[in-house]
Image (tube, rainbow, N blue to C red; front, side, top):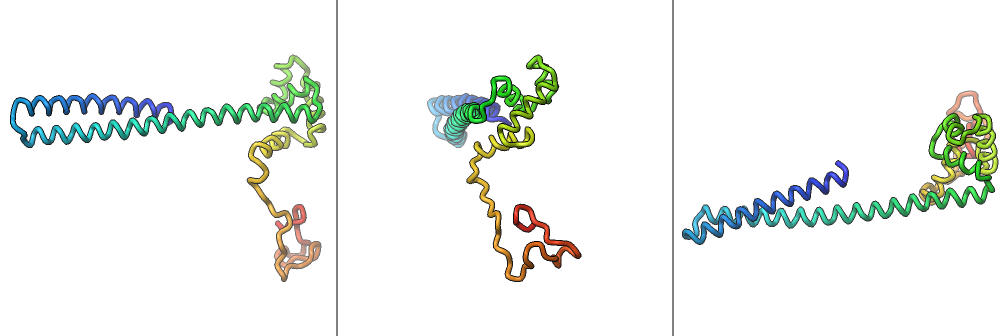
Length: 195
């Protein structure tokens, strides 16, 4: 259930509980005026009090939910603005032409080359050439690597700290020598780290 639907459901429950609480409170009061305090009136009073407590708790929950939703909306606005600003800064750093910037933005959005060409009213070969220049200026090979540049900036590289050269165990064979765990083959490495 989305936050909007949940808020509407809680608001409806609060209204229903408030009506029921008012009914039981008025009924208990009118019964008390007409007769002596009895079990029936006490039960109605307890029910009214319980309903009022439910109204209060649900109203507080609704308020908290709406505050969380407003905060999340503000964060999304800031984040989307930050992403747009980050993209523009990177495009300026790479000195992309306006056409290259448009093509790069469409590529970041995940559009296929044919759709980019149609939207820009250009040939697919032109779009491919522009994308190749964008990738070269950005120092990447494809759109996935291009996207990862922005993801790294947004997520913060501090989130993923990888020790590229873990300490080798004392009994580990030197790199390039035969490895007992890989029969007959050299030790396989990736960026100097055993895999």
